Length: 310
Image (cartoon, rainbow, N blue to C red; front, side):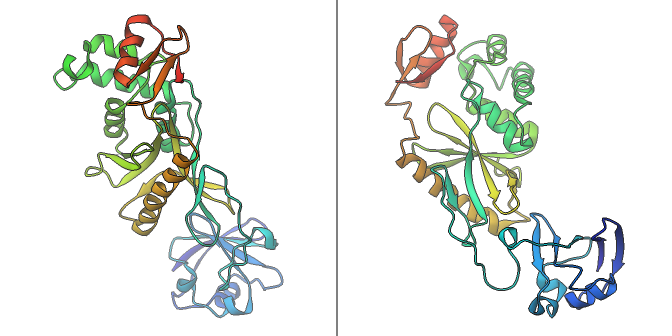
């Protein structure tokens, strides 16, 4: 296998070593000792391996290394941040927040809600964050939706939109306009990624374009607000928001199972809101409504777009 090794001094070195070689052989090839190197880091998410007597005798493939890897030598490896491949995990229990669930037994992988601003653009914020891990693309996503609606008047007709294409396109460009299923479908196609929506009322996962794309992101919906769902690798603080069904099927299965568990936890804490039964208040004129359609009609007729729970 070919490896790119980043030395303790920061210098890069490309080496070739047999797949059956041991970790101690790797150190010999790159001419460092266990006294100089305390561990190695490689892969994504980053995996750390301590230089221990046990690990020195282990096969490189067994440790998870494969050709093309970038291996970083670590001169100092504090125990409080190292999760080594030495057999046992001694990580203390992690106290989880109300919007988190544990994915693995090592306390490293945490599935959690990433809260986005509650400003009526939450759907676009959530999709922007899960795809790009930033919410600065929110208005661009609105523009994509407006352009698609105007370009396909047969698909997005008045019966679907409850108004003309032109009026709907103008409306969705407003920062206060709520997005929903129409926008999720459009953005899924445009971004070429399936969008899974955790419905906290029914505790089900709605899947947009799951048959078309292997990559997917997850967002949550509590009835009035969308948030992003992410996987946090606690030890490295790496956040994963895009998952692939083909390349990481086991992880995807675990994440989807834990997504429902996360939904149950959020629901029990009162995070959900049933738009079919619970009232929604217009924060501008204080009128109250039941159901998204009543809210949409009021917004269209009054120009009021600031709503909240009663």
